[in-house]
Image (cartoon, rainbow, N blue to C red; front, side):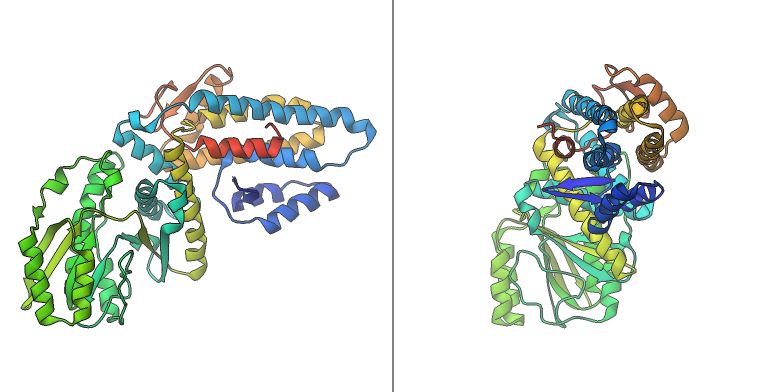
Length: 460
């Protein structure tokens, strides 16, 4: 619900709904409204909502001498929650992703992305976009490289028609397709083809299996080939593309699908150079020379007396381009901002090598702490605190819903078994059962959580 990045607090729409129901005094009302008016766009983060909002309220409430003691109690209650949460993060987030099976790693990362996206879009759309965010995060890794992500918006269609293109160069008789964007290859875009080409590119059947992301990524090869064949129908002559699976991902995925592709030797490269020189201008030859290197032959077909050759470049770049589609400009703009933050979130998880391993354990512990510490607050403040706690509960509902689980029964059990702070029981979203925290079901970046708590409570 609230996300902290650098020096700004971002509050999402769900936080606004909760806060708008709370009747503040004039000072609190002014402060909260001011935050909502200035920071209104962010990734959802329900686990720290209660801590952030209540701490902010307490810090900025002006009180008389009679209420000093009560104010100290309130601050103490908030800091107790924060310290316990920080300790919990340190206890649970010592895992290193390199020691994990790839299926688990990608499942956890995927759940984080999907949970955030599904607060704004449908489940089907969130599955597709979460997958794309996952691929981008794994390929980039370095935080400094996040600026190399290019998100190109295309009005029309739905979010699940978005796709990721990697160094695609298309040379056609008519120009370059409007929906295919060039990345990391210095090529001049000449013109656009008819709208039919756009439809041809996007007519692809997305396959997804929640429990086997390796197969899903592997199947992207087939999707890419099919997309290329669709492009061919509209007059494309040559297509060069880099590897869809970057070499930094190979440690997580089986490599057999690469070996199944026929190698393209230097003779094939020379023959293609001659072919281009005989049929195209000097610029085309220069473009081709730019992509010569270690390549694999992906596809060779002859359609309507035209030769179509698709090459895969093995040494792919770290950069990537996401073509984001949507029905309205407002929708595309909102999702565009969210995707950048989700990718940044995932990169933090991978680079920090520390996960906040929740499986809803952390959320339920915080909820328990809040309910316990209500006694520190005056009657009129208790209602406010309970409304904020409902925000954490709402987050859990979203999480369980996205995992096709029953919220009421699972949350009740998690609350009961996590009353004791020393317990570390969670519900594994992958295996679908309760267990100790040496196994996990969901991950979040520990570093970002700690930054938020430090910032709002002065616990440095």
